[in-house]
Image 1 (spheres, protein in one colour):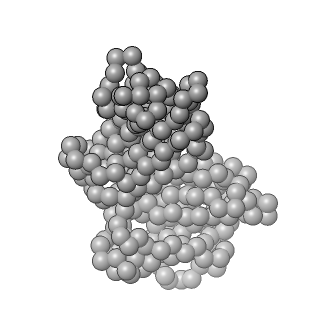
Image 2 (tube, helix red, strand yellow; image 1 turned 45 degrees about the vertical axis):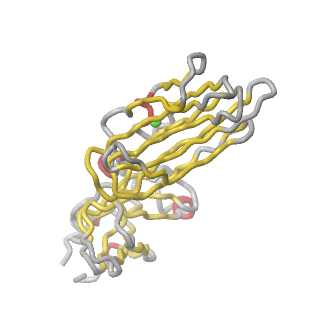
Image 3 (cartoon, protein in one colour; image 1 turned 90 degrees about the vertical axis):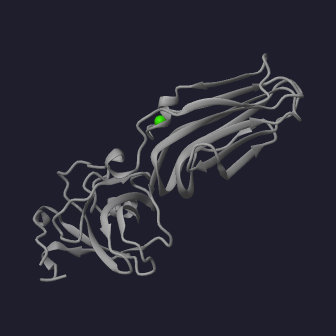
Length: 288
Ligand SMILES: [Ca+2]
């Protein structure tokens, strides 16, 4: 019988069903995505307008779970990552979502929930670097935490015969199966009447020497992309963010701006997540 020790403080409870029947691996410290229509709950007066009363408990009903609200609160689909200590292989599990206590304040915590980096990325240059070209980085420490502060790579390519590029390597400390998430955007500017051929790519490596490219985007005109979170999956220790200005163009500035690089545990196929309709704590069944 679950204890739900604090449920008397919490007005509304919902079951979250985690279906891992298709995966033969036990998942440890696994971040599951909970997409919640917080806008409807807030407008109905059931949730604080800052999402501060959201709580998650493990299947025993008593153990609080670390969570991080990555998405925008008060939206129709707020993405919340919940770190579940253990999801059994080939089976289902239930955890609990609560909200509705107006006196609560947020316990959303990025570092306790996601796989984070503790060291700034290693910087390097590529291509046939030419003396009057320029590859630099700025504020690499800003790339560690999603706080709206962006570090960036900068490439100034001035010679048509020379490719220019720069990269960052992020070290996650050990090889593991993860989904790597990069919050970023890129921009390029043609100087004078010259052209743009500027790419940003994401690659993974287990040994730091051999990389597999899993994402790339190229700008062929002055412009920029919107801020997005790109997720790549693999078993790796190292993630590389690289940029490259092709020699076909003569004068161009290119930038890759990065707010954060982090990861979550990943195992295929991923468990499916189902959020059940609202229940009330006082109507909890005697056993689960
Ligand atoms: Ca940042």
